Figure 1 (cartoon, helix red, strand yellow):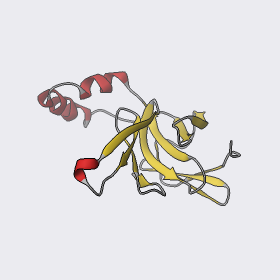
Figure 2: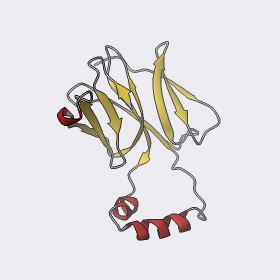
Figure 3: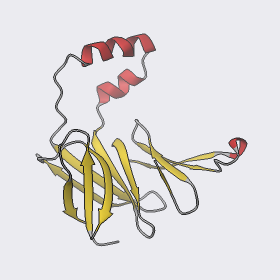
Length: 148
């Protein structure tokens, strides 16, 4: 979750959408707008004052999980009990997207077979993108692309 200069809150949701919430000071006036669909699992959002909204994608969407999320709670609980026993390793892809104010993708950076997996946060520093992960023991740095 991140707030923009106008006090609106942006957040990623599990189905891959980025939502903008406006009017949070008055519960009866809250407006929710879909800004973008990332096609992945948007976990970390980084908003620059004069730049794009950067989104760290923890991984690609998994159709089987999307289907499971629509099932009854008892089915999801049973699947969760099985899943904790299964070996898991995130896919070897790291990806970040940048969106403009209208929700258009202005940058899509991805690397397959990366040594860095499951990006869960993104920010910029000294002309670089800094990626964090709950899976990896360190951070990843890459040159920030030129503004479009």
